Length: 484
Image 1 (cartoon, rainbow, N blue to C red):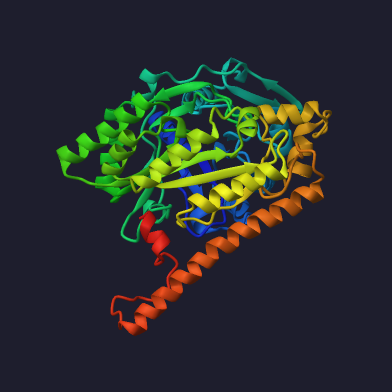
Image 2: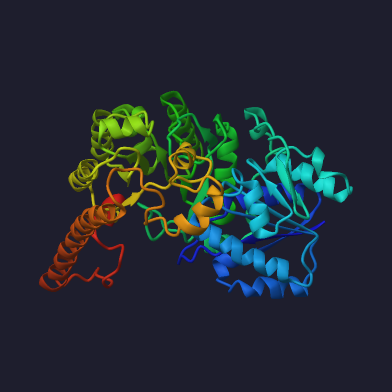
């Protein structure tokens, strides 16, 4: 079949490689289908151009995948309108990803799509396309929901890909990098990457064993890729695309101490064997930070670990089921800084029972441990569909129980920096006042530091006639250099 995959525009200057779409594209191609990418993200096409493209080209299937979020939702609705309005609308319109998975019926009716792929896409896509090719009933395909006129059927979920299957390139092939313009995607900048590095995201495993109450990822457990499998992809990206900085976008790479050690030892052995040095970063867990592990990570090229701290109050951490304490947080962040790795300090606020005091504790922590490599601010918590917090919001009447999906996406979640649901004893007005004060403090601290740095650079330029000066550039401040 002729298949068109749509990569929506994230409206950013540099683009993040669409890992999920590329993974599904590889499966489709392996099954003998012709795959074309309509890449709005790197070309910034206006939405109406998708309809024009479809009017001039004929496809059997079209697919879009989105993560939960107000921006992705708006893009999906707009692009769906163009797809459905085309005179050459493909026979099957498929959507997938974290966003539609918990609410397939809502998304099918809202977008006019024919099928939702729920959860992991490889095996479901393979089965779905075979079924479509042979004109067989969709009722036999596990892991999908489908619409026939106004009737929506939700089939049973498909079992997750096993570890053995995950490492079988016939079952889960390497993402189809060659279908995308990697020369554009490798220009991604991430915290700690420098001007001479080409950046690409990768996965070292799937899933997470923790159960934070705001997390919308519905699959359970963790499945690790083998180091042999990971290094094969690293080697390919290094040789074919010049990648020398890898962003491991797993929900959680540091899933345990043994797995983290295994991963880092594999990287170190590869670097020693090949002589190919590269740098990388990942999502980490403060429970599993030790000086020994962090030193190994630093030695293997890790310059940044993104930590989801979320709160600096033991009661708040307990209610959101973070599995952390403030002592763990302080110890882990200090140890990370001590070995020369930049920590990502991520906080949200407004979870069940939180107060102005818990917000102020987060601000004080950020001011104390900020190494000025990033602008750090605090967002209100969002009860994304699929998360325990979403169902709590429905139970408490914070979302319309008669149509919570519509209420969430059309009325409440209009921007990720605004309150969707208020789980505190404060009024919305009081919450916004508190967030204004907190983020004003953090923004001022960040730019005061940057101002001082630029003044030092200016003084050095003229007092020392600094011939290495190359203009006032965003990444020429000591804070960024430290992170790199």
